[in-house]
Image 1 (cartoon, protein in one colour):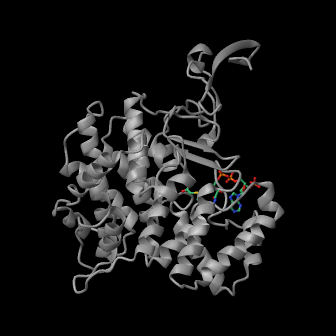
Image 2: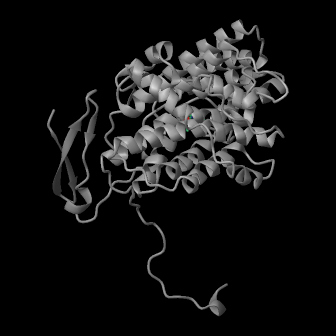
Image 3: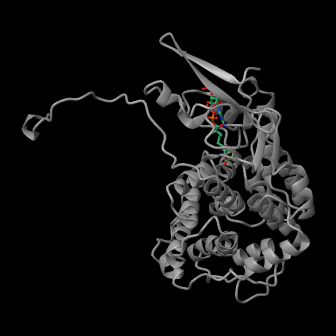
Length: 429
Ligand code: CMC
């Protein structure tokens, strides 16, 4: 293949270099396009064909259903590693040694207190506030309580910022839930591992001893590993773009939380369970909802189906489906929504509409069912996703800064009014 791409506009030819990634992905480098063509830009709504950066963190092949972090297959990572081990890998580039991992865990525990004044911010929210909104505000507020600038070129500075946010984020996330439910705000228990601590932060009440359920902890560990990074998705791109302006780590992460909140992104896990419950209440007629999803006059979409990048099975969905089956067997649970989910998946996968458009179950299709089985309330599903995605956001922010990427500032094709004279208020209708 030629190492140049040729673009012809108005009879004139322009050459652009072709870049090839380590997995043979091909990109046309159009960074000189506007300058060399005197103002021509590309237009790509939703960035469906646009690479925003070079990255060494995550490789994803949507056609083949492959997901790897730093070269390691997601299937191997979920089977063998812990959440913090994968976080270390994603953020720092290599799997930690035993000593590095132990230090990482201890350093994170050392940062698990948050300033008591943060409680005042939570109190300012109405009880009806969605925990994602509270989490976004609290994450941003961390900047005020930690005003120092993170020098990304200093390994110590960066490491300290990483352990600080990994230590405090689950506390803030679970405070959002506890406060809305009239429960006293909990503190970390540093005798526990990261995932068990999240469980006790959520569920422990002062009057009773909290018993850790290892089955639940394992399921949550696996689920959160699956969410750790997913290259340039909406919230991660948001974190990178906010950080590219020079905004600090906590402010950039707060923007990531807001981006994740939407139902087309992380909010889909909540939307899936609400959809399954609605189908159940409506008599369990799966075909009716499949037909609604196919009807172009109906805004309804099958939540948990389809993906911008995966045009094959989402590998995370395969692992989650198995985890859901195991968890329900281990806990001896019988959830009608799991049955509806399986039936829905079966019917959709056989349907021409979904096959033609390559719409498969995505990570969110089964994750909400697992969260619910663990006793996590629906409003907290996307918050759990945020806890899982945090290492990926940090890694991508760090890489963006280390690469010295320019400020993210897309162009546009202006289609509004051309110059017109100012109309005085008397002349306006
Ligand atoms: N139900 C019914 N039709 C769908 C669905 C769906 N869930 N998803 C896509 N389509 C149709 C869509 O109507 C379009 O049809 P046509 O070509 O006839 O106009 C075609 O499939 C392509 O869809 P698109 O909207 O152009 O695809 P996209 O890449 O812009 O959107 C998506 C990807 C994930 C936003 C979309 O599939 C969707 O809305 N899915 C439901 C929400 C969801 O589950 N989101 C979680 C995504 S995975 C986790 C995460 O990112 O956080």
